[in-house]
Length: 292
Image 1 (spheres, helix red, strand yellow):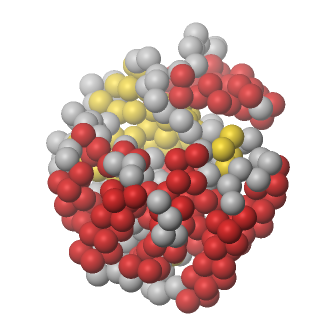
Image 2 (cartoon, one colour):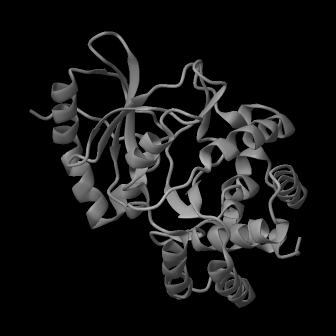
């Protein structure tokens, strides 16, 4: 039986598309099925969740958890697999998974304070400790970075045109040129997370900080710091972005120019989506290319 469900503000973007509206219509039944299957008590959805319906849950024995019903995009298909691969080392644990419902029951971080509430340099200290633990060898079923990058190269010009050329052509040309150089010259392939920003690292009791909501790929280590470099959570200015690039590259022993290149490419690839342009992403690309 379906349950009453108020769609949180973070998911309102799905109402603008037929596929999104169809997904929203399925949520009450899917939620009811998960509650029954896992005998859960659930609270109101988190208002800020953007790519899934997420809510606090409690197991029959009182264990706190989070129930997630994913929006069916390709980026999150292997989220549960990545979390299982890390097995709780630096990331939340999977407690249960229902692939048919695209539902995950995961460890809840307590107190759950996001990393960006720390001063920027203390947050970067935590990232330097955390990232190497997550970069474990991996292969199938995770998508290779090279394959994902081929999709960006194909979609970026199309999205740019559809959005009425919202930024300078030189940015697009620079990103495509970097992709052509970066993809075939990658180093060792490890598990990387293309959405590891400072809002997706939470204070926990089992470990000081745990990663949530991974969007996993298999690629070189220089790709891994990219979301932290561009993320506005730790400061949105040319100086802040370059400081993060410099610190993370140096302290993680990475090639700075490759980290910078991946940050330019991925940030521009994610700057247009579902008919919406994200100007802050475009600003970061300009800054990383040397403009103010």
